[in-house]
Length: 340
Ligand code: KG4
Ligand code: ZN
Image (cartoon, rainbow, N blue to C red; front, side, top):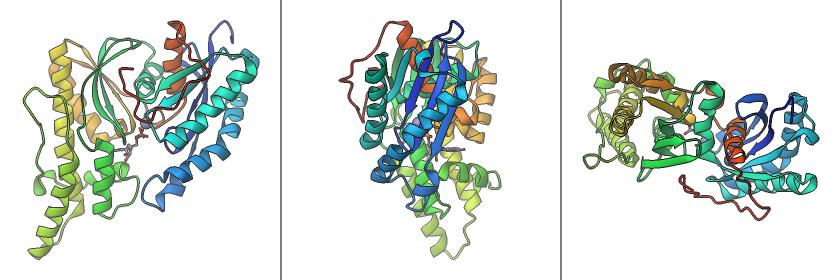
Protein backbone atom coordinates (compact mmCIF):
# COMPACT_ATOMS: atom_id res chain seq x y z
CA UNK A 1 0.00 0.00 0.00
CA UNK A 2 1.13 3.55 -0.72
CA UNK A 3 -0.73 6.28 1.20
CA UNK A 4 -3.53 3.80 1.86
CA UNK A 5 -3.86 3.00 -1.85
CA UNK A 6 -3.44 -0.40 -3.51
CA UNK A 7 -0.14 -0.40 -5.41
CA UNK A 8 0.26 -2.66 -8.43
CA UNK A 9 3.49 -3.29 -10.31
CA UNK A 10 2.57 -4.18 -13.91
CA UNK A 11 4.63 -5.70 -16.70
CA UNK A 12 3.77 -5.79 -20.43
CA UNK A 13 5.81 -7.57 -23.12
CA UNK A 14 3.28 -8.97 -25.61
CA UNK A 15 4.81 -7.51 -28.76
CA UNK A 16 7.74 -5.14 -29.28
CA UNK A 17 7.48 -2.87 -26.25
CA UNK A 18 9.02 -3.85 -22.91
CA UNK A 19 7.03 -1.91 -20.34
CA UNK A 20 6.59 -1.65 -16.58
CA UNK A 21 4.46 0.66 -14.46
CA UNK A 22 3.38 1.35 -10.91
CA UNK A 23 -0.32 2.19 -10.60
CA UNK A 24 -2.21 3.18 -7.43
CA UNK A 25 -5.90 2.30 -7.02
CA UNK A 26 -6.10 1.45 -10.71
CA UNK A 27 -6.07 4.96 -12.08
CA UNK A 28 -3.20 6.88 -10.52
CA UNK A 29 -0.08 6.26 -12.61
CA UNK A 30 3.07 6.72 -10.55
CA UNK A 31 5.40 5.56 -13.35
CA UNK A 32 4.96 4.21 -16.88
CA UNK A 33 8.23 3.10 -18.48
CA UNK A 34 8.19 1.96 -22.11
CA UNK A 35 11.26 0.62 -23.86
CA UNK A 36 10.37 0.45 -27.55
CA UNK A 37 12.16 -1.82 -30.00
CA UNK A 38 10.59 -0.15 -33.02
CA UNK A 39 13.89 1.13 -34.45
CA UNK A 40 15.27 -2.43 -34.42
CA UNK A 41 12.26 -4.01 -36.15
CA UNK A 42 11.91 -1.17 -38.66
CA UNK A 43 14.80 -2.51 -40.73
CA UNK A 44 12.90 -5.80 -41.21
CA UNK A 45 9.59 -4.12 -42.10
CA UNK A 46 7.79 -5.68 -39.14
CA UNK A 47 8.25 -7.31 -35.74
CA UNK A 48 10.60 -10.32 -35.78
CA UNK A 49 9.41 -12.53 -32.87
CA UNK A 50 12.80 -14.02 -31.91
CA UNK A 51 14.49 -10.62 -31.89
CA UNK A 52 11.62 -9.20 -29.81
CA UNK A 53 12.04 -11.97 -27.19
CA UNK A 54 15.78 -11.43 -26.96
CA UNK A 55 15.36 -7.69 -26.37
CA UNK A 56 12.61 -8.23 -23.81
CA UNK A 57 15.01 -10.48 -21.93
CA UNK A 58 17.69 -7.78 -21.86
CA UNK A 59 15.30 -4.94 -21.04
CA UNK A 60 12.74 -6.29 -18.63
CA UNK A 61 14.65 -6.10 -15.34
CA UNK A 62 16.07 -2.60 -15.92
CA UNK A 63 12.60 -1.42 -16.99
CA UNK A 64 11.00 -2.82 -13.80
CA UNK A 65 13.75 -1.24 -11.65
CA UNK A 66 13.19 2.09 -13.38
CA UNK A 67 9.41 1.88 -12.88
CA UNK A 68 9.83 1.36 -9.12
CA UNK A 69 12.49 4.03 -8.88
CA UNK A 70 10.52 6.66 -10.78
CA UNK A 71 7.40 5.86 -8.75
CA UNK A 72 9.42 6.17 -5.54
CA UNK A 73 7.75 2.97 -4.40
CA UNK A 74 9.64 0.04 -2.91
CA UNK A 75 8.86 -3.59 -3.68
CA UNK A 76 7.67 -3.95 -0.05
CA UNK A 77 4.92 -1.42 -0.71
CA UNK A 78 3.64 -3.26 -3.80
CA UNK A 79 0.41 -5.23 -3.20
CA UNK A 80 0.33 -7.35 -6.36
CA UNK A 81 2.28 -8.08 -9.53
CA UNK A 82 0.32 -7.82 -12.79
CA UNK A 83 1.38 -9.14 -16.17
CA UNK A 84 -0.02 -9.53 -19.69
CA UNK A 85 -0.48 -13.27 -20.38
CA UNK A 86 -2.09 -13.00 -23.84
CA UNK A 87 -2.81 -12.43 -26.62
CA UNK A 88 0.55 -11.73 -28.23
CA UNK A 89 3.78 -13.33 -29.42
CA UNK A 90 4.34 -16.38 -27.25
CA UNK A 91 8.11 -15.88 -26.78
CA UNK A 92 7.59 -12.22 -25.95
CA UNK A 93 4.77 -12.93 -23.50
CA UNK A 94 6.84 -15.59 -21.73
CA UNK A 95 9.60 -13.13 -20.82
CA UNK A 96 7.19 -10.78 -19.03
CA UNK A 97 5.36 -13.68 -17.45
CA UNK A 98 8.52 -15.41 -16.16
CA UNK A 99 9.72 -12.11 -14.73
CA UNK A 100 6.40 -11.39 -13.00
CA UNK A 101 6.30 -14.93 -11.57
CA UNK A 102 9.86 -14.60 -10.29
CA UNK A 103 8.97 -11.37 -8.45
CA UNK A 104 5.75 -12.93 -7.12
CA UNK A 105 7.59 -16.02 -5.90
CA UNK A 106 10.45 -14.09 -4.34
CA UNK A 107 8.18 -11.61 -2.52
CA UNK A 108 5.14 -13.81 -1.82
CA UNK A 109 2.88 -11.20 -3.46
CA UNK A 110 -0.11 -12.26 -5.58
CA UNK A 111 0.16 -12.57 -9.35
CA UNK A 112 -2.57 -11.18 -11.62
CA UNK A 113 -2.71 -12.17 -15.30
CA UNK A 114 -4.22 -9.54 -17.60
CA UNK A 115 -5.70 -9.79 -21.09
CA UNK A 116 -3.80 -7.35 -23.32
CA UNK A 117 -6.92 -5.99 -25.03
CA UNK A 118 -8.77 -5.50 -21.73
CA UNK A 119 -5.70 -3.47 -20.79
CA UNK A 120 -6.10 -1.28 -23.87
CA UNK A 121 -9.73 -0.59 -22.92
CA UNK A 122 -8.67 0.26 -19.35
CA UNK A 123 -6.24 2.90 -20.66
CA UNK A 124 -9.37 5.04 -20.86
CA UNK A 125 -10.04 4.75 -17.11
CA UNK A 126 -6.62 6.27 -16.51
CA UNK A 127 -7.17 9.08 -19.01
CA UNK A 128 -10.74 9.83 -17.89
CA UNK A 129 -11.12 9.58 -14.11
CA UNK A 130 -14.93 9.89 -14.30
CA UNK A 131 -15.39 7.13 -16.88
CA UNK A 132 -17.29 4.05 -15.73
CA UNK A 133 -18.84 1.11 -17.57
CA UNK A 134 -21.17 0.33 -19.28
CA UNK A 135 -20.00 1.51 -22.72
CA UNK A 136 -19.33 0.30 -26.24
CA UNK A 137 -15.61 -0.19 -26.89
CA UNK A 138 -13.86 -0.15 -30.23
CA UNK A 139 -10.55 -1.97 -29.87
CA UNK A 140 -8.46 -1.22 -32.93
CA UNK A 141 -4.80 -2.18 -33.11
CA UNK A 142 -2.18 -4.05 -35.12
CA UNK A 143 -3.53 -7.37 -33.89
CA UNK A 144 -7.22 -6.69 -33.21
CA UNK A 145 -10.33 -4.98 -34.48
CA UNK A 146 -13.19 -5.69 -32.12
CA UNK A 147 -16.45 -4.10 -31.09
CA UNK A 148 -16.97 -4.98 -27.45
CA UNK A 149 -19.85 -4.22 -25.11
CA UNK A 150 -18.22 -3.54 -21.73
CA UNK A 151 -21.06 -3.97 -19.25
CA UNK A 152 -19.03 -3.74 -16.04
CA UNK A 153 -15.37 -3.58 -15.01
CA UNK A 154 -14.82 -7.24 -15.76
CA UNK A 155 -17.45 -8.24 -18.32
CA UNK A 156 -16.56 -7.94 -21.99
CA UNK A 157 -19.09 -9.11 -24.58
CA UNK A 158 -17.52 -9.33 -28.04
CA UNK A 159 -20.07 -8.36 -30.70
CA UNK A 160 -17.74 -8.57 -33.69
CA UNK A 161 -14.17 -8.84 -34.85
CA UNK A 162 -12.07 -9.09 -37.94
CA UNK A 163 -12.32 -12.26 -40.03
CA UNK A 164 -8.86 -11.74 -41.51
CA UNK A 165 -6.48 -8.78 -41.07
CA UNK A 166 -6.73 -6.32 -38.19
CA UNK A 167 -7.18 -2.66 -39.16
CA UNK A 168 -3.64 -1.73 -38.05
CA UNK A 169 -2.27 -4.68 -40.00
CA UNK A 170 -4.08 -3.39 -43.12
CA UNK A 171 -2.52 0.04 -42.56
CA UNK A 172 0.93 -1.55 -42.24
CA UNK A 173 0.48 -3.73 -45.35
CA UNK A 174 -0.84 -0.91 -47.51
CA UNK A 175 1.99 1.34 -46.32
CA UNK A 176 4.41 -1.31 -47.56
CA UNK A 177 2.67 -1.39 -50.97
CA UNK A 178 3.00 2.41 -51.11
CA UNK A 179 6.68 2.19 -50.11
CA UNK A 180 6.20 4.22 -46.93
CA UNK A 181 7.98 2.13 -44.29
CA UNK A 182 7.01 0.64 -40.92
CA UNK A 183 4.88 1.07 -38.90
CA UNK A 184 2.53 2.25 -41.61
CA UNK A 185 -0.38 3.55 -39.55
CA UNK A 186 1.07 6.91 -38.49
CA UNK A 187 2.64 7.44 -41.95
CA UNK A 188 -0.67 6.88 -43.77
CA UNK A 189 -2.43 9.05 -41.19
CA UNK A 190 -0.09 11.96 -42.03
CA UNK A 191 0.05 11.43 -45.80
CA UNK A 192 -3.73 11.08 -46.14
CA UNK A 193 -4.13 14.66 -44.93
CA UNK A 194 -2.63 15.84 -48.23
CA UNK A 195 -4.71 13.49 -50.39
CA UNK A 196 -8.21 13.45 -51.87
CA UNK A 197 -10.03 10.20 -51.00
CA UNK A 198 -12.46 10.66 -53.89
CA UNK A 199 -9.67 10.38 -56.44
CA UNK A 200 -8.78 6.82 -55.33
CA UNK A 201 -11.85 5.01 -54.10
CA UNK A 202 -11.89 1.52 -52.59
CA UNK A 203 -14.68 -0.88 -51.78
CA UNK A 204 -16.29 -0.63 -48.34
CA UNK A 205 -16.71 -4.16 -46.96
CA UNK A 206 -19.75 -4.35 -44.67
CA UNK A 207 -20.31 -8.16 -44.80
CA UNK A 208 -23.82 -9.46 -43.93
CA UNK A 209 -26.48 -7.03 -42.79
CA UNK A 210 -26.37 -6.58 -39.02
CA UNK A 211 -22.90 -8.12 -38.66
CA UNK A 212 -20.32 -6.37 -36.50
CA UNK A 213 -17.49 -8.32 -38.09
CA UNK A 214 -14.85 -6.82 -40.37
CA UNK A 215 -12.77 -7.93 -43.34
CA UNK A 216 -9.77 -5.85 -44.38
CA UNK A 217 -7.62 -8.29 -46.33
CA UNK A 218 -9.27 -7.46 -49.67
CA UNK A 219 -8.38 -3.80 -49.52
CA UNK A 220 -4.65 -4.46 -49.81
CA UNK A 221 -5.33 -6.26 -53.11
CA UNK A 222 -7.60 -3.38 -54.10
CA UNK A 223 -4.76 -0.92 -53.54
CA UNK A 224 -2.29 -3.14 -55.45
CA UNK A 225 -4.71 -3.44 -58.39
CA UNK A 226 -5.32 0.29 -58.40
CA UNK A 227 -1.57 0.99 -58.51
CA UNK A 228 -1.04 -1.50 -61.36
CA UNK A 229 -3.99 -0.20 -63.39
CA UNK A 230 -2.85 3.38 -63.07
CA UNK A 231 0.68 2.42 -64.05
CA UNK A 232 -0.55 0.47 -67.08
CA UNK A 233 -2.71 3.40 -68.17
CA UNK A 234 0.40 5.57 -68.01
CA UNK A 235 -1.01 7.78 -65.23
CA UNK A 236 1.14 8.96 -62.38
CA UNK A 237 -0.10 7.73 -59.01
CA UNK A 238 -0.57 10.28 -56.27
CA UNK A 239 0.11 8.15 -53.19
CA UNK A 240 -1.45 10.74 -50.89
CA UNK A 241 -4.76 10.18 -52.72
CA UNK A 242 -4.34 6.41 -52.35
CA UNK A 243 -3.57 6.75 -48.62
CA UNK A 244 -6.63 8.97 -48.16
CA UNK A 245 -8.88 6.66 -50.22
CA UNK A 246 -7.72 3.55 -48.36
CA UNK A 247 -8.15 5.19 -44.97
CA UNK A 248 -11.63 6.47 -45.79
CA UNK A 249 -12.76 2.99 -46.94
CA UNK A 250 -11.52 1.33 -43.74
CA UNK A 251 -12.67 3.98 -41.28
CA UNK A 252 -16.13 4.52 -42.77
CA UNK A 253 -16.94 0.87 -42.04
CA UNK A 254 -15.32 0.92 -38.58
CA UNK A 255 -17.11 4.09 -37.49
CA UNK A 256 -20.50 3.13 -38.88
CA UNK A 257 -20.47 -0.32 -37.21
CA UNK A 258 -19.30 1.09 -33.87
CA UNK A 259 -22.06 3.70 -33.81
CA UNK A 260 -24.67 1.11 -34.83
CA UNK A 261 -23.53 -1.25 -32.07
CA UNK A 262 -23.76 1.45 -29.39
CA UNK A 263 -27.21 2.57 -30.51
CA UNK A 264 -28.54 -0.96 -30.88
CA UNK A 265 -27.35 -2.05 -27.42
CA UNK A 266 -28.49 1.20 -25.79
CA UNK A 267 -25.02 2.37 -24.72
CA UNK A 268 -24.54 6.13 -24.46
CA UNK A 269 -20.72 6.12 -24.53
CA UNK A 270 -18.12 4.98 -27.05
CA UNK A 271 -14.61 4.21 -25.83
CA UNK A 272 -11.76 3.71 -28.29
CA UNK A 273 -8.57 1.79 -27.55
CA UNK A 274 -5.49 0.32 -29.23
CA UNK A 275 -2.71 1.64 -31.46
CA UNK A 276 -5.00 2.83 -34.28
CA UNK A 277 -6.98 4.92 -31.74
CA UNK A 278 -4.18 7.46 -32.30
CA UNK A 279 -5.42 8.02 -35.87
CA UNK A 280 -6.51 11.61 -36.46
CA UNK A 281 -9.14 10.85 -39.12
CA UNK A 282 -10.71 8.12 -36.95
CA UNK A 283 -10.99 10.61 -34.10
CA UNK A 284 -12.57 13.20 -36.36
CA UNK A 285 -15.09 10.80 -37.90
CA UNK A 286 -16.10 9.37 -34.52
CA UNK A 287 -16.42 12.84 -33.04
CA UNK A 288 -18.81 13.84 -35.83
CA UNK A 289 -20.78 10.57 -35.61
CA UNK A 290 -21.11 10.71 -31.82
CA UNK A 291 -22.25 14.31 -31.95
CA UNK A 292 -24.93 13.43 -34.52
CA UNK A 293 -26.11 10.45 -32.44
CA UNK A 294 -25.89 12.12 -29.01
CA UNK A 295 -23.17 9.75 -27.72
CA UNK A 296 -20.22 10.58 -25.49
CA UNK A 297 -16.78 9.72 -26.88
CA UNK A 298 -13.57 8.78 -25.02
CA UNK A 299 -10.03 8.30 -26.35
CA UNK A 300 -6.80 7.77 -24.46
CA UNK A 301 -3.92 10.18 -25.15
CA UNK A 302 -1.36 8.79 -27.67
CA UNK A 303 1.05 7.51 -24.98
CA UNK A 304 -1.73 5.31 -23.58
CA UNK A 305 -2.87 4.16 -27.06
CA UNK A 306 0.32 2.24 -27.76
CA UNK A 307 1.34 -0.76 -25.69
CA UNK A 308 2.16 0.21 -22.10
CA UNK A 309 2.05 -1.33 -18.64
CA UNK A 310 -0.03 1.34 -16.88
CA UNK A 311 -3.11 0.06 -18.69
CA UNK A 312 -2.26 -3.49 -17.52
CA UNK A 313 -1.97 -2.25 -13.91
CA UNK A 314 -5.39 -0.61 -14.21
CA UNK A 315 -7.08 -3.76 -15.56
CA UNK A 316 -5.36 -5.82 -12.83
CA UNK A 317 -6.70 -3.53 -10.10
CA UNK A 318 -10.30 -4.34 -11.00
CA UNK A 319 -9.51 -8.07 -11.02
CA UNK A 320 -7.76 -7.73 -7.66
CA UNK A 321 -10.73 -5.85 -6.17
CA UNK A 322 -12.94 -8.75 -7.31
CA UNK A 323 -10.63 -11.17 -5.46
CA UNK A 324 -9.23 -12.67 -8.64
CA UNK A 325 -5.55 -13.58 -8.56
CA UNK A 326 -3.64 -16.27 -10.45
CA UNK A 327 -1.34 -19.11 -9.48
CA UNK A 328 2.30 -19.41 -10.43
CA UNK A 329 1.21 -21.97 -13.04
CA UNK A 330 -0.32 -19.18 -15.15
CA UNK A 331 0.70 -19.79 -18.76
CA UNK A 332 1.10 -17.50 -21.76
CA UNK A 333 -1.85 -17.84 -24.17
CA UNK A 334 -0.97 -16.32 -27.58
CA UNK A 335 -4.61 -16.32 -28.82
CA UNK A 336 -6.36 -15.65 -25.49
CA UNK A 337 -10.08 -14.97 -25.93
CA UNK A 338 -11.35 -11.56 -24.87
CA UNK A 339 -14.30 -12.97 -22.96
CA UNK A 340 -12.04 -15.23 -20.85
O1 KG4 B 1 -1.85 -1.46 -30.00
P1 KG4 B 1 -0.56 -1.42 -30.76
O2 KG4 B 1 0.54 -0.53 -30.27
O3 KG4 B 1 0.03 -2.87 -30.87
C1 KG4 B 1 -0.81 -3.96 -30.96
O4 KG4 B 1 -1.18 -4.30 -32.11
O5 KG4 B 1 -1.18 -4.51 -29.89
O6 KG4 B 1 -0.93 -1.06 -32.27
C2 KG4 B 1 0.01 -0.93 -33.30
C3 KG4 B 1 -0.73 -0.65 -34.60
C4 KG4 B 1 0.19 -0.70 -35.82
O7 KG4 B 1 -0.45 -1.48 -36.83
C5 KG4 B 1 0.28 0.77 -36.25
O8 KG4 B 1 0.47 0.93 -37.64
C6 KG4 B 1 -1.08 1.30 -35.81
O9 KG4 B 1 -1.31 0.67 -34.57
N1 KG4 B 1 -1.09 2.76 -35.64
C7 KG4 B 1 -1.84 3.59 -36.39
C8 KG4 B 1 -1.55 4.92 -35.96
N2 KG4 B 1 -0.62 4.84 -34.94
C9 KG4 B 1 -0.37 3.50 -34.77
N3 KG4 B 1 -2.72 3.35 -37.37
C10 KG4 B 1 -3.33 4.39 -37.95
N4 KG4 B 1 -3.08 5.68 -37.61
C11 KG4 B 1 -2.22 6.00 -36.63
N5 KG4 B 1 -1.99 7.27 -36.30
ZN1 ZN C 1 -1.59 -3.51 -28.10
